[in-house]
Image (cartoon, rainbow, N blue to C red; front, side):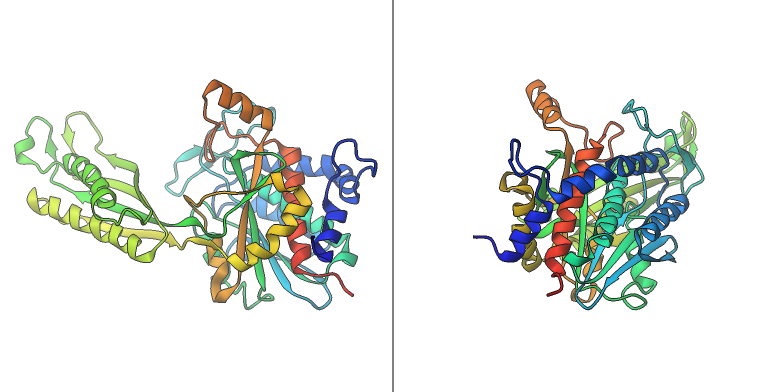
Length: 436
């Protein structure tokens, strides 16, 4: 039998089943009254995406929305981060985080509100920009949670930290905010929560993993040097493109032949740049790699293997010594098992057991894990965003659904936002018990 606390939460948030004689729940009435405005906010955010550490207008809009909801807002935390504080007497402090940034992707969804935005990336190159990872859904849910909590203060007690974090896609925003005093200038949280969209789960559902959920990520730049010259005289050169090709193939043996098979690891070469013309052998080639692992020693083994291989190739081919640089790194996202165990029953009571699913860890990465600094328990759950009929049709055709970061990814806004707000609000209420 559910606890009294869980039962009370379900009365507030659980939508009735079809044909229920009890009518709409209080939450349903609230969402219906706010749905158009929330979907309009989502549409605006989707149409006006900004790249990592360029989220000036996005941060301004989220700061304004949180202020209107009643939060005390501070901007410019970690460059472009937003912190909104809702206080409601003594009680626990709960951090709820959204990310703000979009991706350099040209949208191909054909939606009437599809992004046509462009920007300059860090190299000064013009790129198209799209919310291809659902951060626009995340932001809208955060604003909705803030509005709901601000207008239902009789149902919770404590402090809520509403975080708008820049540069999640660059794995830099969480660190920037924490380094700028997030846990010293503001109340240190007792718990940290977040949600993330997923395209492989239906709207109306959430998914969770207890313990390791997302891998640690390390970005590595490799500069392979050679000796340039004419393409018709390769014998008078040291061809770095050939060395790069050999290195890329050899990198794959680090995971397949050196890493213990029971330890997950990924090494992907995401970018290779070298040369300017058909008949010119260049002086250098630049590679950009992403490494994924759940253990620090596995990550270190990947890095050591990269160094050893490129230096060995350079020596074997009489090339200048290459340069391997670590660009950025973030630890795995570990969902604290005790926190998951506490919140899971209320998610089940709120959404219904068939709509709360346990899923396996993935090798995708997030910097949300950094909010576990100084022992803060953390929990990120996944939010289904694809209509069940769309999933059914894709399976019937043997087709894959567009993944995150795809130019074709398009969540169904209203039900995704509604479920995200319901689930996150239920979790917050569980952690901040109502006043006696």
